[in-house]
Length: 320
Ligand code: AMP
Ligand code: MG
Figure 1 (cartoon, protein in one colour):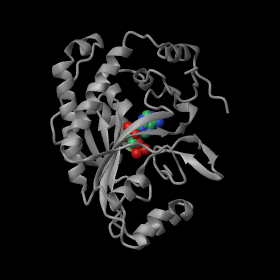
Figure 2 (cartoon, rainbow, N blue to C red; figure 1 turned 180 degrees about the vertical axis):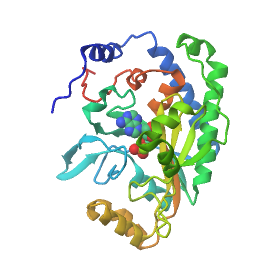
Figure 3 (cartoon, rainbow, N blue to C red; figure 1 turned 180 degrees about the horizontal axis):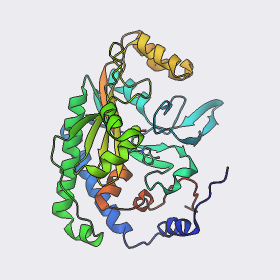
């Protein structure tokens, strides 16, 4: 199916892809500073910096997730074996923190062939990077505190050391106050209906946590209450979701039941199931923050493609 965009939208989208755009060096300078700030904090807390995996037999199914909109999945054969391109390293993170080290992070490139209808959301790319972390035995609250520190410190550093750059971008950036407010998805749904994410993003001054969102099998769900111990972080000013994470399932029977419930192939998750069956899969919690979305917010940019020197906007395949 061909998705139609207005000519003016298309010319805007192609204009932001011009390398040599005067904003690009400033955006990249800010991105470098944010990445340095965040990775320094994590290294200082004893995290190990893991390098990413791109091709694997097992990756994030991304399903079921309320935000799911994948138009294609890439599978290739290497050495006679079918592998997928990485949609997220959740399976790898779970296995690694179980076997050690127990605190890890990765700047993980994710390839997700998002529907071309997402060309003009301003929030979607088909290649992006998550700062993805996982901590054995951690709980939701630990991850909230950790990301609040990463986010507040990054913004403080940018405001303090990059005043001229923010001015050049005409960006009036607010330092958020931690701890951020926590909402339950159901209460927001009750108040705002299906568009709760946009509404809470538009009306909040600071980022907010939203918990208890039904989605992929690996997020922890209390089978007695039905409650999910997972969370999204929603940025203000309409920028929307920037992070998703959870406490994780670690019991064999529950994982198996949920994989079957979601209609997934057990074989794709054999290693994690084997570890769980042997009681070697440690409980953990973690999250991944979308680097480009966070930088887009810091820089106050209209389209996320403006963060990438080689934009990966759904539906558009550039020369580089
Ligand atoms: P997920 O676990 O799928 O929610 O992905 C984690 C984070 O990655 C999200 O909260 C976003 O910040 C970012 N992200 C997910 N999909 C995309 C996309 N298509 N383009 C840009 N960033 C994305
Ligand atoms: Mg998400």
